[in-house]
Amino acid sequence: MPFNHVSIGNNGDYQICCIHPVPDEHKKNINQTGVDDWVQNPYLKQVRSAFERDEQHPGCQRCWQQEASGTQSIRQVQTKEYKIIGAKPAQSRILHIEVAVGNLCNLSCVMCSEYNSSAILAENRQLGIAVFDQREFTWSESAFENLQQILDYRPRVIHLRGGEPLYNKRILELLDNFPAEHARNTLLHLTTNATTWTPQWQQVLSKFKSVRMMLSVDAVDELSEYIRYPGKFAQVEHNIKQIIKCDNVKPMIHATVQNLNIMHIGQVIQWAKRMNIYLMLDLLVQPEYLEITNLPPVLKQQAIEHLDSVLTQDLDSHTQSEISAYKTALETAVFDQPRWQRFVDNVSRRDAVRKNSHKDFLKY
Image 1 (cartoon, rainbow, N blue to C red):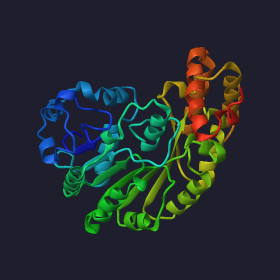
Image 2: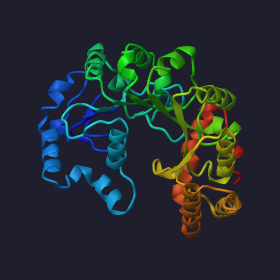
Image 3: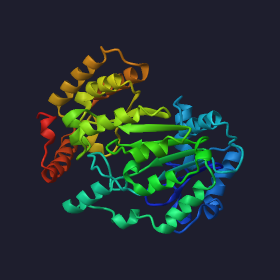
């Protein structure tokens, strides 16, 4: 990956990959630095050298640990993609770019952060708890020129995140300008909340060889609208039905499993099945007060009973394994009153601003 991969975070910092940040003394930012300068970075060269010597670089420990445990790592996933597109990773040229173009987003999802959502940052400023300044996520014209330079290398895999990429007009412009003859040999990955879908997006995406869309849906109906405020589930469902009509789009539902939806996870499983879209359940880790085990005894028991019911359904092996693991985690969890109070305090202050209530879904 370090030979063929360019990764850029929401604030414009170059990274080795999305889970391998660069130490402060070697950081470079796309607002000031083009890709030709980045590939000469001493830290990047250090990582490349470790790969050439078949050594496990400390910054890559997460992938090595996943592979040692039998779990597929990002490195292995990318290697498979290179084979699909007939690329040769040994060549030191840019094959894959992974870019989070700022934090511009139209939703304030309860589990999201200022780093990934301008709407959450604005709400946090209103609440007096903001950590970042929105200007830290502003991409200058120089940044977009440098991003265009990367695209001019004609990467074979383009992975765009946000923020919300379908809400970002600059991303639409960049992809619109990507030559059709190259797009026909390019895999495009988009992670989206599916609240936005336009004929312009449909036209632009149609020229790519394949578009893999990770559709972020954690619940259905009112609970979806609570978690992914102020999105409207009917609009999301309508957009997804339009998206999956596109012949070159390969959709996947991604659900972030947390204490707010653990007692309703069966509903999103059944909804994804009705939509005929593969569902990937992803257990939330941060913020810790939203973890599934952070429930008082009565709610925890309700969650266990719900998961028991889900396990009687016709599930694929991945979902079956995930649900069983969630049930075990709940059964062995010890109630932590201070942590539960952090949950109540945090969601309650957002409820006050949004004029809604988590108690509509968690009865305690």
